Length: 332
Image (cartoon, rainbow, N blue to C red):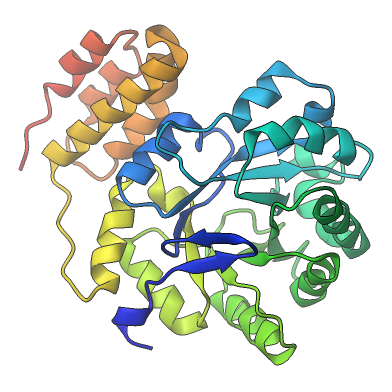
């Protein structure tokens, strides 16, 4: 497969997406400002943070706001998590007015407070549940339902192919594999050969659903490597996009056979302030400046002699203080 056809449109059920470079759902990160910025930077499709089906059923205000759409977000997916089917019908009624293009089910989160409820990657212990969840959702709505999962709970229980089949039995329109077990968390290294296996399994069993990959996509070049090595239909940038929304435009350049534009300090500063302004529009200045600290430190990662800048940023409570802190950065 050459570069010219590695980047291409994707069909997820009834939803057509113009390209195959996605921003993965990330709790605590993929809010409206970050998703909006990544779209500006070239992301083809974006996912909300995890949304609790139970929280939706209770009409929790903090849960509902997670489903708000960014102004430039023509298409997006809402990612749900649940440990049972009890709240699904009530949850879908709360979700319906938001009209997402995709509903994604989280079966990959390794965090104990999620897995102890039977949700996230704990769902991989119960493949029958994912069949039931997907079937209920596909019966209740015409919105395509997709599933994101891991290779298994641990190395002794790698059941991703059986779990994929269970999701397909329910009517899943796409599959995304994060190529690690739950016990691996986010430790190196993701095993991309499992993604290859999943794609091959779908082809051999005559499923035309797209397969997406996640795990160790930290550089724009990694998208090309994963697409070439695995034969999958698209990639999801997760932690690789934090502090680095440029990864989308760079990956598109590489997939078109071009040399990507190097990211300068000036570009990073511009992105920080664009991100901060989007945060201020969403949360107000004080809250935005607090939330933006972790993002700013990610933007500055790898730049030498930024300790004093980071120290000033983590104390900044206004846009003006961010300007003062970042004025110390000089472009190379």
